[in-house]
Image 1: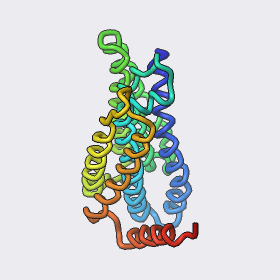
Image 2: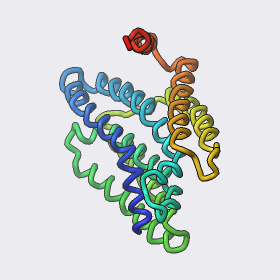
Image 3: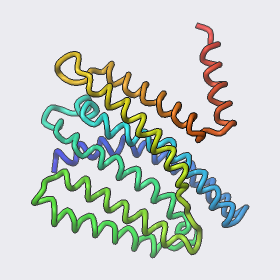
Length: 248
């Protein structure tokens, strides 16, 4: 329990830092859109916000999953290092939870708190039930998998029960492009992660290079896939020019 709890909290808090900031910032925007432009306009805004969520949070989730071992090694003592095996499951659980919080806005805006609570309770029952059934037999790693399964159920139920009030649409084309870019990024990160020039695991410099190279590949892949709009391209170009022209 101690091993699982320590690594879970580190993994969850790392991803949740980004997810929570995103969700906090979108709350006032969605509520304001609901009051001023109605259901159709709010649904379009949710789709745009989901796009941003996928672009920002999915690569971080993938990157943390691939760099689980050096990440846990840097932040914990040796006794906790084997816990790196649950990092990916925890990271994707938090990512899925973030999507579920976007999908449930129909319930929130229409004060369907009872249905919201039912969804939460059913997902929790599934998670706890699977833990009681599987963890004693297969070990603590399964607890990470069951957590992900519970959040996937929560995402489905929030999206389904919110549909009569406010339809949340997962942009499939955007999800495909972001997933392809994240996979390419993952290959680069994995390749650098396997380097072991010191004979005792990836060094801090390799970890930094993996993150930097992964970010460059990810942005480049999105650019080539046409997922970055002209306005966003202009912003990136202006940012790069500002960095180049910045006086020493």
